[in-house]
Structure formats: C-alpha cells, structure tokens
Amino acid sequence: MSAPAPPMGLIAELTHRCPLQCAYCSNPLEMDKPASELATGDWLRVLDEAAALGVLQVHFSGGEPMARRDLVQLVAHAASRDLYTNIITSGVLLTDKAMAELLEAKIDHIQLSFQDARAPEAERIGGYKGGHGKKLEAARRIREAGLPLTANFVLHKQNAERVGEMIALGEDLQAERIEIAHTQYYGWALLNRDALLPSLAQLEHVNGVVAAARERLKGRIVIDYVVPDYYAARPKACMGGWGNRFINISPSGKALPCHAAETLPGFTFPSVREDSLAEIWTGSEAFRRFRGTDWMPDLCRSCDRREIDWGGCRCQALALAGDASATDPACARSPDHAVMAQAAAAAEGAPLDLVARRLHAPEA
Amino acid sequence: MTDLATAPAFRRGVRFRFDAVRGAWMLLAPEKLLLPDEIAVEILKLVDGARSIDAIVEDLAARFDAPRATIAGDVVEALENLAAKGAVQL
Image (cartoon, rainbow over all chains, first blue to last red; front, side, top):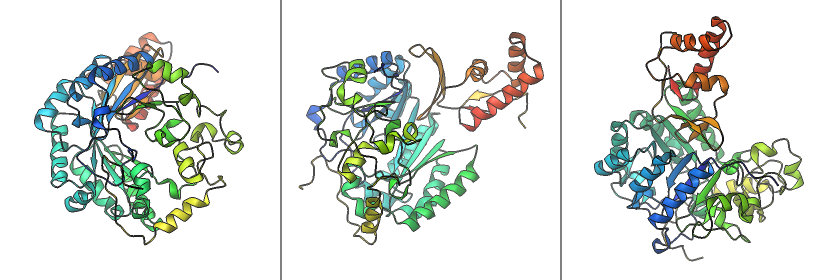
C-alpha cells in the first residue's frame, strides 16, 4: 500500500477538564484524568512533528482547552510553525487578559459554543451559573480583537424550537460563521440519547428556519448546518474518512483517527509519548485499519459513494450495529438501518432527565 | 456585477500560504481549507486589499498570453467564487 497523503488537521484535545457539564458532550464516558495529561514539552514536540508532516490547521479542543495554563504558549508555538490555529472553547475563561495573550500569540480563529439563546436554559444544560453571560462577554472580546468568530449552537429536543433565536443571537454577536449542529450521538450524548434526540417534526422546523436564514444572510454570515444521522438516508463522512484528513490526540497522548475511537474494542492506539506522528500516520495498524476502501463490507465497497461517505462512522457502526466494520446504520442501504427509526421512536415522549458530564464516569 | 475598481481583500481569519510539504498553495480559513486552482493561485498572489481587480487583470495580461477581456472575465469569476466561499471580500 502506498503512503497516505499527509493529514490536513490536528485536533489537540488538551484536557478533558471543563467547567461545563453538557450532557451531550462528545468526550468519552471514561475521561483522561488530569494527572495523565501530556506535558507542555510533549505538545510542543507534537506541534513540530505535525507541521513537518504536512498538517495545516491545529484545533485546540478539549474539554475546555483554556483550562490548560500553557494554551497561549502552544498557540504561539503552532503559529511560529505556520500552522493555522483555532480554539474550540466554551468561552467562560476568556477574560480580557486571556484574549490579549492569545492575540499576541497570533491566534487565527475562535469557535465559541453556546448551549442556548436564553441564559436560564443554557445554564441548565451547561450546569454553570453565570456561564451564558460570560460567553456573551467572550464573543464581544473576540470581535473587539478583530478576530473572526464562529458561534456554535448544539441542538437537541430540549432547545430545537429556539433555533431562530440562536441564529438571531449569532447575528447580534456579529459572528462570521454560525454552526447549527444537531447533537452527534457518541459518548455522553449517546448515554442521554432518549432525552436529546429531536422528533421528526422538530427536525423539519429546524431545517426550515436554517434554510430561510441562509437565504437571508447570504454573503454576510455562513451557516454551517449539521443534521442528525438518525433521520438521514446517507451517513456522514466521519472525519472525512478514517486516517484520511485528521489526527486527534487525546489529553493523555493517544493518537486517534477520531475523538470517539477509544470506544472501539480490539485496538491498541499509538501514543505520541512513544511514536512520532509520522510513524503513527503512515505505519500504525490503528490508522491503517479502516483507511481507504479495502476494509469495507461489500455493500460499501461496491457503492458509488464509497469515497464520498467513506462507509460513515465506525463508532456508530459499533454502537448501533454491534460491529465496527459494518456499514454505518445511518445509511438507508444498511441492513441495520431500522435501528435509527427505533431510536427515534424510543426518544418520543421519553423523560427529559439528563446525566450531566462529569470527570468520573457514571456507574453502569 | 462586481466593479473592476474594487480592491479585493482576504477576509478576517483567512490565510493564503505555500505548503512546502505538498508543493501547493493553500487557503486556510476558519475550520475550512481550500485548494485553489492554478488560476486562483495567480490571482490570490496579487490580492492585498489595495490593488484593484483592474490592476490584477493588468498584471496578469502582461504575463499571460490571452486577450485582456478573457482574463478580466476569468478573474471576476474566480474572485466571485472565492467570495462566495468566504475567502475574500469584494
């Protein structure tokens, strides 16, 4: 097999610590403990290796990446290697001082998450009193710094009817981009699926509002819209294909083809503590296993969308079809596709109680 | 219709740079990455927020063997396309 093309993006999950407790968090239920986190020196080396390997963009994520005291240093280092730097943050730690330091470090872009358009509802989901106001302040600081802002809103059945208010908030904040992203059901979100998965009627409402807003805001604000797999006919090309575009580094240094990959059994994921990124990308069994089309079941391999969908999501195939190498059940051609409709039916009228994200996994 | 006196500029958060690993020019934008084609690369090298579309056409017409009107049409089309993708503002 020829060497794979270089990765485009590095997702640096600096920590699983977070002041918020969103029940739809895509972090794994079993999170990395603070003591297991990579040291600053490890991350500096990883950034050097990433730039040399051909990575173009670094997404500092988490948990809350701003909970790491060395974030500014890491951003500055990445920028010095000509990497495009992006922070994906809740914004509650983005003080005037932090903003000034990040600007000095040459941050390129910040994605700010919101839990809702209204403070009480947002803070119920985030479990952080006063959080919404801090986010509004953070948005103002980002704009005043002259940086582009992406306002991210995660949708679920408990806030879907307010999608219009969310877009209006994004406009008020003068966001360059607004992400309206239906919850993706991995990790904590999968655990809480019955209390989060919207109904078809809610989805259609959101689709209509987003389509109208896109038309109205054309040329001014880009709205990126992520639909829920559960009502889709085709799976999403998870991570643009396994080992195809991205490397995700967990807080403790595991290199993963996607942030949820640690849920997959039978894998030994390489660690940046032991191997170089180049060895991991080109040589590791974990990155090769589902790369390209050779691994695919016949259904996918013979499909004309094989290099568009890349077979969908391996973690979803495992979670819903019981087999990580099966066709993603989100695909209407999958023999397991009925589980999607069953899940939607189970969520109809289910209790709205949520298990809050905590650093320690809930008892089974 | 785009005015040829307009000076296109990169939008906030957009970087245009040569990637030595791939031997190709890249447009890096918020959570997006574009690989401009050869024509777009030649145009983007001239985008600085001050130079007008007319001046860009002039520069390209002096270097490439094609009628000026054809080049002007190609430049406007490419820039409008890049504007729609959020890379430049016109």
